[in-house]
Structure formats: C-alpha cells, structure tokens
Amino acid sequence: MLSSLPSVWAVYLAAAIAEIAGCFAFWAWLRLDKSVLWLVPGVGALALFAFLLAQVDSPFAGRAYAAYGGVYIASSLVWLWAVEGMRPDRWDMIGALICLVGAAIIVAAPRTPA
Image 1 (cartoon, rainbow, N blue to C red):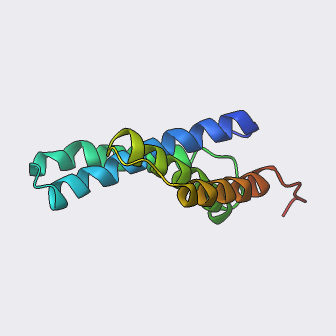
Image 2 (cartoon, rainbow, N blue to C red):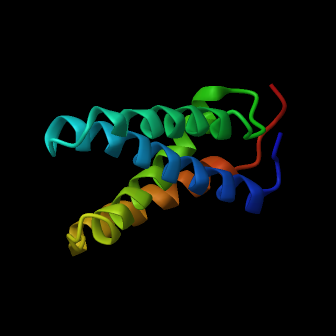
C-alpha cells in the first residue's frame, strides 16, 4: 500500500489514465463505430484502474475514491485536449482547479485514527 503523498498522487494519475483509456475504448466502440476489439484493451485498462486505486493506503475506500475524483476530472480535461483535440475553456480549468483543491484537502488533511 502506498501512503506517501507523492506516491498517492502518482497512483491517482496512473489510475486516471487507465480509467479514461478504458472508458474511451467503450466510447470508441459505441459512438465512433470502432471495432469491438477495442473492448479488449479497454477492459484491461479498467482492471488496471481498479487495481491501482486499491493501492492507496486509506482505511476507507470512499475517501480514496473521493480524492481520486479531482484527479480524474483534471486528467479528463487533459485527455479532451491531447486526444480529442478540443481545448478546455476557462470554466473547465476553474472547475478542475476547484476539484484538485478539494482532492488535496481530502488527501492531506490530518486524521485521527478511526
């Protein structure tokens, strides 16, 4: 299990890439008329996402998932720009920043043992 803050953020980023790639494989198959074979790496990427997220040292899954949500949102906007060619607007960026601040509060907040 990973408990240092840099490790947690790295796992969250890797998990976001895996989740977005896996979900995009389904999107490509259903919405972009790509081959059903896109689902093979898509399912693998989603399994990797779940594995990575389970590596975060947190006594509660919900808290780990909530903090991950901010990283996922910001990473999705990078995907939007890098893969889909649509530049995020200022409202996208403001929203992502708010989410990352919230995620940082969840990850770094001092906690008393449960």
